[in-house]
Amino acid sequence: MANGQVKDTMLADFIWKNAEDLWGDFRHTEFGKVILPFTLLRRLECVLEASRVKVRAAHKEHKDSGLALDSILRQLTGLPFYNTSEYALDNLGSTKTRQNLEDYVSKFSDNARAIFEQFEFASTITKLDKAGILFRICNNFSGIDLHPAVVPDRVMSNIYEHLIRRFGAAVNEGAEDFMTPRDVVHLATTLLLDPDDKLFESNPGLIRTLYDPILGIAAAFNQACAAIQCSSKLTNQFLFYFLMAAYSHLRSLGNEASQTNLSLEIIKEIRVPLPSLAEQEAICRQLEASLSNLDCLAGKVGDSLALLNERRTALITAAVTGQIDLREDIA
Image (tube, rainbow, N blue to C red; front, side, top):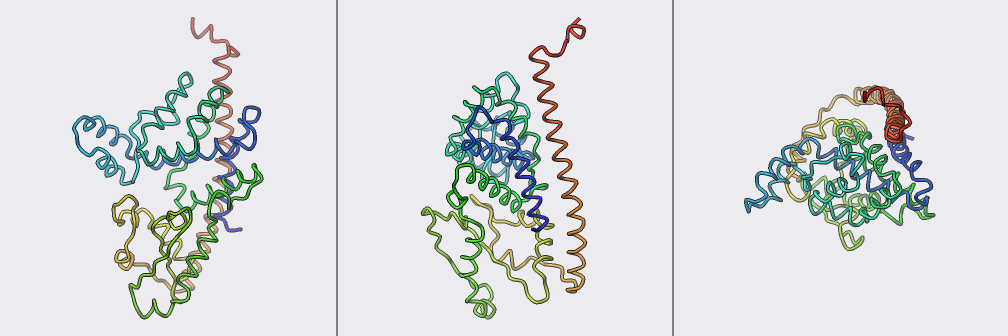
């Protein structure tokens, strides 16, 4: 198993550990209805973190101006979604957690809020609140770092797939009942492009289209799909690491729309360094060794965070239930 896959699985397992707090109040077949939307919420929160102050200020300034506020806020985030709430998972409070969380989710843009509605998240929030564990779950997820700089989109996709597989296993159903596996998408792309290798080589810029009939929408290819095939002078692994390093820059080149895309013209202008094959392989070996060490450290940090969250929750519980004598401090 590749190092990246190990890290994805470790983080997915760490996230799924929240299920330990659900036993007794939720059936095991319901765990996914809690874990999946909270994971999504934390990811959206991390993605939007850098722009949230600007978005809240712009919303306050323009909400009664009659301007196209939705477009303004999307431009500020540089993304097709935003959130205008003052709340986040780490500041919901322990007394009005449900009300504050509901406010938080309601302040997402329509397209993001619709996802939580499909999860029936409001019902899940109410059930967690009645069980007395809503604050604890929110607190747990607030401590998971899912920022894109730490967890790139591809890794986040892998993590979510792992979580869906866990949910599928809990209800005795396969992941294919909930999603299109990546190997199926890859196979479809290969079948589309592979027969036309010579045609692509002789016609630079040639475009092939594919009809994606899944659910009647572009569910598998998500409206935009690109396949890069390496020449004999470039290894797949070296190109992968280069694209990972240039991720933020490449995103900044995208065309602004409901979904940011890199056009063929933009892709053709990207310059990739081209050391010798021997140097590429040496660079990749060194990177793999270094990343392996970082994965081990990340696992240890994850375990430490889980322990700290557990102790923090225990301390709060002890303080509010009278298990800690605070009379001297009050006096």
